[in-house]
Structure formats: structure tokens, C-alpha cells
Length: 406
Image 1 (cartoon, rainbow, N blue to C red):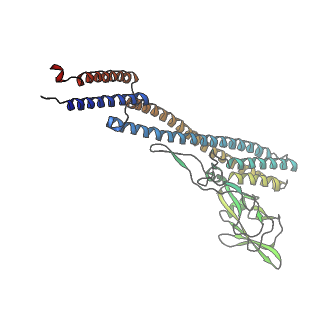
Image 2 (cartoon, rainbow, N blue to C red):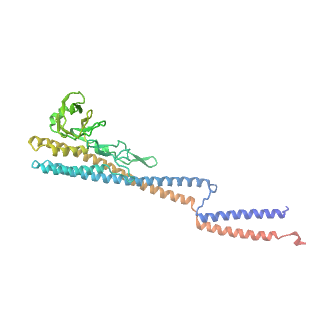
Image 3 (cartoon, rainbow, N blue to C red):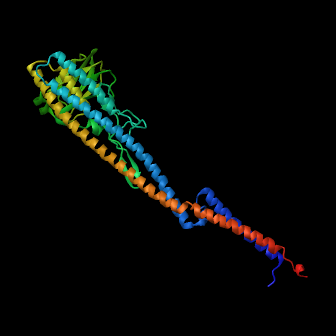
């Protein structure tokens, strides 16, 4: 078979290109530390590498979410611990207030401290999370959940929502407890009532929390509600108190005096300020009472029940109900805090699981992707030697000629 000079040169060039490509690939592997440089090198390994990197990226996002969730839950746990401490102090003050030997000034001192504790509870209920969101606002995390209404009573402005986040594939975790369940919807030991001003009122009238002065009369009226309606009559402001259900009037066209006690069906409350004609207030009976309502009734009872046998009996009823409602609030707080602790345990367990999964994924990724430096450098040395030998051989062959044999 004849071998032309052009064939010799073409084969030599092709061989050099192949050897240079192999050497360049090995040099790139050593430089990058990666065995698989492009999908065509190993399609199966390349697919697995992409999957592992996606898993690690997703795990990193979950870890960030878990870190934020842990901080949020720890802050809620701390808030609930402070809340239970405040409840314990409230209990001490309520027991102290039950002493029959207290003077008017003693009662006033206890009432003042109860107000301070209540303000502390409001501050706790408005605790913010690590991103500035209000922990107990439900879905309304951007708005302060607890504040005073037009009557100065503490009202809840959040909702019943409970936010959740995804902490792993197919796993979600609740990250907050709403304020209604935590502080508002507390079962009352016995029937109670709450007061509020209608949202459409145009005047500056305010209604107090009120207290039960006659338990038997109140419970015979329960579960009906009262409406306190104001009207202008000849330049005078008058009010009427009637049943919400039946319309029966218990007080009719009474001249209004700011701060004067209104006593109806075993309940006593006050309207102060300057209500306008058409304004109205609601006295709503029920079987639930917020912790703030419990505090306010205790404070109002200490400040308004006279130091008489009848007054002391009414105060005793207020204290007894307050202590029972306080126990219900403590039970609710303990239940919620226990749930927070369980979720914190879930966070820690998931964090450890993800770390272990990441370690295994990184080891597998390294096995598939990382170059064996000892093998690669040895191969590079061999390829360099082979290239040099090929170059020398080609140099010798290219100088051969038939004219040398003549």
C-alpha cells in the first residue's frame, strides 16, 4: 500500500490534535478540580450532579427558613414566659385584695399595680418577631394587634389566622399563635359581660369595663345583652337602657351625667365624656373574657365597690371570678407555650436531619464530580510524555525520502 507524504502529515496532525485535546482536558480537570467538565463527559453522572446541587440549594433555603422560624418561636416562647410571670403576679395581687382588712388606700395601691401589670401584658401581646412582624396578630403581622378602643378598653385588631412555613419537602410548621386564642377567647368561670362603644358613634363618650354587683340578678338576665342609647332632648343629653333581644326598657330618658354609675340587672358600669344624640353602647353578656377584661374588672371592682358589707361581697365575687378566669388564662398560656416548645423541637430535629442529608449529598457529589489529583497528574505526565514521543517520531518519519536510497 502506498503512503503518500500528505497522508503522513495529515495523520500526524490528527494524532497531535487528539493528544493535545486529551492533555488540555486533563489540565482543565487539574485546574478546576472537577472530573466531569461538561455533560458529554458522563451524561449519567452529570444528571445526578445537577440533582444533588438542586437538593443542596433547596436544603439551604430550608435551613434559612428554619433559622428564622427558630428565632421567631424562641421570641414567642420568651413572650409567653413573661406573660405567665405577669399572670402569677396578678394572682398574688388578687389574693392580697381579698383580705377584708384592706383600707381604701390599700385597694387603690393594688389597683394601680394591677394597671401596671396589665400594661405590661399589652406590651407582651404586641411582641414583634425578628422581621418586625407582630407575633400575635394572626395574618395581620404588619399591624399592632392590641390597642385601646374609643372607650379605653383593650381590643384585638388582628385575626384568627395562623401562619405556616415549609421547612422540608412536604413538611409545614405553624410559626405563630394568634392573639384571639392566646389572650382574648378565655373561658370564663361563670357568666360575664363585656362593654364596647358602637363604631359609628360621633361623640367622645366612653364606657367602662363594668363589674357585677349582684350575681343572682345578673345570671337571671343572662344571656341577654343591653343597649345604652343616647339622644338629645331639649338641649339635654338623655339615655335609655334596654334589652337587645326584647327591647324592654330598664331605664328610660335618664338625664346623663358623665361618670355617673349605671346599674341594671346586677351590672354596674359608667359612661363618661360627651356622647352625642344617636350614639350607643353595648353591654354584651357571654361565657368568655379576655385577660385584659379580667384585669379591668378587678381594677374597677377595687376602685368602685364601696367598703360596706354589700360592697365587700360584690368585690369577693369579682375576685373569685377573676381568680378562676386567671387560672383559665394560665392554662391557655401553658398549652400554647407547650405547643411552641414542640415546634421548636421539630425545628431542631429537622435542622439536624437536613445537615446529615447535606453531608451525604456533598460526599456523593464529591465522588461524582471531584477529580482524583494523584491520578490526574499521573495521567497528565503520561500524556505529556506520549505527546513528546509522537513529536519526535513524526520528526524522524517526515525526513524519510526515497531519494536517500539512491
